[in-house]
Length: 425
Ligand SMILES: Cc1cc2nc3c(=O)[nH]c(=O)nc-3n(C[C@H](O)[C@H](O)[C@H](O)COP(=O)(O)OP(=O)(O)OC[C@H]3O[C@@H](n4cnc5c(N)ncnc54)[C@H](O)[C@@H]3O)c2cc1C
Image 1 (cartoon, protein in one colour):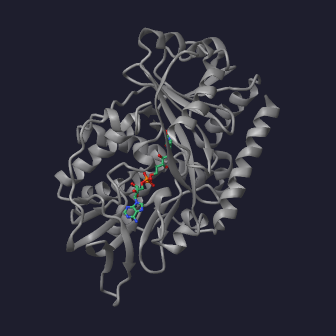
Image 2 (spheres, helix red, strand yellow):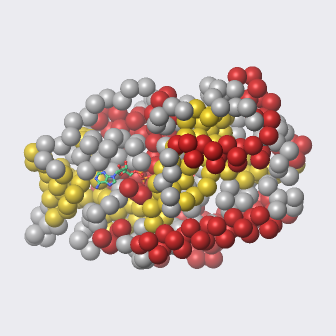
Image 3 (cartoon, helix red, strand yellow):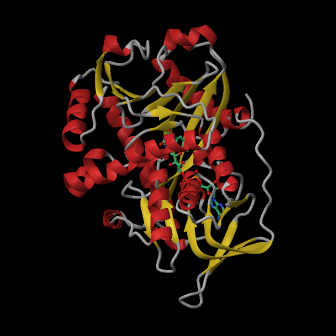
């Protein structure tokens, strides 16, 4: 098996960016070069705030953003029915609408900054694992009625144009969604930020933030060997945030999920996945996968508190693949990797400002490509124009997750849901 991720192997060389050395000044310092940090920085630049410095502990897109499934679609990790119950119809529509706008913002940025990121406008398909037509019909009616979002219901036979698997009873297509190479997109955003005057330092892990000493003063953001003095600080460290901000880390569960890429299948791919849609299924512990332009299958699934190595991940996911496509028994796995997501107890994103004045964008979980972009827009508006963060986000605060006990509880919840999927089946 190859080391590293398929994305890193196929993205081409990345430009070398210097670590921060010495003291620099900036209007805004963003901590984290994932989608949340990059979206905030480009959002600021698009609003005329160019004096932005990003500090990334590893390299741009090193975290979840450069190693995810590549699904770009509406919604949050929090289930749409829960969002509706929490916010009522208007509130839920407004929040969901931010993520739909974000999908369009990503499309616009790909075009505007000429980001070559293998975007495939094939939609996202929810395939029904269970032999019960009502599941998808109810979901379709619910989304149309409550969110004014229109997904297309497909029978088992119609689904055959997208997947030849006999595993599924039907499908629900989200046509306005697409999928892409997330690391190429992250690097493309980083290049756009630098081209427009922003600065990015890699291998610059932030170890300490000293809040302003006077109301008009700036924050001091320290890395080993340097510091940024900035009026505003945005913390966007995702599931990789450690030892920097107690209130944020107390409220965040770092949870792993896994991905693999098969060898190229050539013409055989169309015998299993003839369509262009990215696919996931109706179980709580669903598979998510898509065909890549070079005829590999990128396959993801499972969540765990364990950060496993490549070989065990490949074994687990190959087993899952064969439940859906038994004909791919002899296919080799070329790459397998894991990534850390940040989850809040309430499963909703956490966007806001800490008492010390630092802004934050965390808790995107396993459904973060759209929501990180939405968060970047909200934070950019807040910092550039003083626009308040929508009040609804205050309902999803920094609830404590209780460290190892919280992680154990999350694992048990997932195992229980897996068991319920099995019973349902
Ligand atoms: C395997 C996998 C598959 C997924 N699939 C999908 C999908 O298909 N569609 C979807 O919508 N979502 C998906 N997600 C979720 C999505 O990728 C994340 O929600 C999103 O990328 C989170 O972005 P982020 O910027 O918050 O975090 P990250 O991308 O993790 O970025 C955080 C960055 O902060 C840096 N950092 C942390 N601490 C510091 C520090 N002290 N100093 C400097 N830098 C620091 C890290 O090095 C990292 O680069 C998936 C996630 C994973 C892991």
